[in-house]
Image 1 (spheres, rainbow, N blue to C red):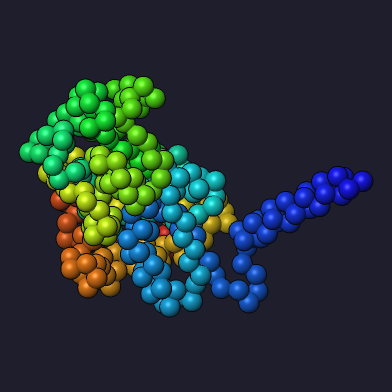
Image 2 (image 1 turned 120 degrees about the horizontal axis):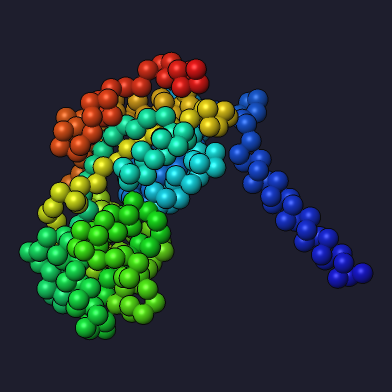
Length: 316
């Protein structure tokens, strides 16, 4: 009887926890604040830029903003499941597929930075001065020859950074599937966000691909240095996409639209342009404003606010 009682109690506890989790995603009840669920990539979250934006936005609209971070792949998956009202990500190919598949409404570019390849200051693979694809190939060649001396640490988490890494391998003429194998001990997958990946790379004295914003935020705690910083393929654009109310009728499309319009407003763009200056001495991100041609976004994608009837037009 004792064993049965414990089994029933455990089941009851599990069911209670599941109900609690489900209740967290239920429609906002009377007396509760309206809710906006944002699913985002780690670089925007880890640098705490979104924390400041959320505080301002919550004050503007008396709304409860709830943000969950992961890689771009995770952020999109949550939206596909209906667990987000808005995604803030950085992988244009998957962004456009998300929209084409009917889950997202439109893409609005709001910020950009760059990817860089960082590594030990003594650069054991000798990649300094190379193009990004040349550098990746050299790291692989040196890693295969001396895996104890040269290592590469990948996000390995289906993030936007991980996707860009795959593009670099492809441009180097290398099949990514042949790189990411257990036999290649020089290649490690962190399976985590950018901050922890940088820390792991630092401990291993390896190389990694990362965005300039997260690297700048963590740099004082690392011995890694930027080694490859130039190349068109390193441009990293962040976009906001409201989840379609056609795909998920319960999504808070109206509040997601307001957040997008805040991002590209003068106040939002000024904050992006200045964020990090006081604490680190330099901005962590660049605003999309005035840089549409540079970052490859059309005028509609990075300059025009979303219309007030944007959500109703999508449902029509």
